[in-house]
Image 1 (cartoon, rainbow, N blue to C red):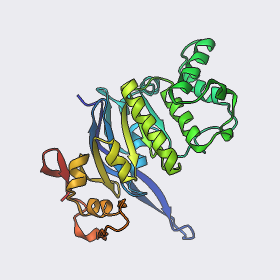
Image 2 (spheres, rainbow, N blue to C red):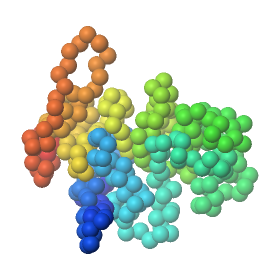
Image 3 (cartoon, one colour):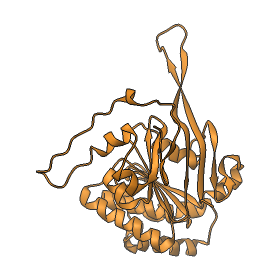
Length: 295
């Protein structure tokens, strides 16, 4: 049984139009449109697409940081969307998130010790001494020193801040982490260090990742399966190696054609995406074993 199942997930936002009109009209914007996929225990599942495709909204709906309009999220055999508040708080110990921006996701008024202790305090886990020991363990896990506990976020580099954010996500010993573009705000040299840390922690702690990204080279390197999103819908999904080697959807082909080639003398044709080249309402169907495309 998959650890996570997302079934026909939809999220609509209301937008008021006609600011200066006598009667303002309300339009529904569908940010996530009938999204369905599953993630196996211990897997790194990639969710890719350009900005505005609905990746982050999908991740936040799964964690109920925002409430979906319809659909269902099954985590470890339980429907997350049907849980009352107290039960949902318990489930959140197993589902955590690492945010994209390491600069805004940490409270600048809190020391690192307070940031890492906060989840333990909220969930009423351990005595003060036990929480202190746990914060020291967490810093060691992510490659930082015990002496960093008394510092504030502004005293760290971007890569160190993201390590602190990861340590905070690990505080409650979750089984799944939603990694929302965790390295996109970092320098290239630091990105590799954080990615290697994520992979090492996955092996040591038996973690499952939902990895949200737009860096296709990174997704190809670390994800076993991948789903491509376009305007709120999944248009192609399957084994990463198969999908990258033989894309079927026009959007996927255009997206993959943007990946830079290491050889500066090699020629590569950039594919211009034509939104009229496919039907937006086309359902996902098998194109090969374990490979689905909306064509």
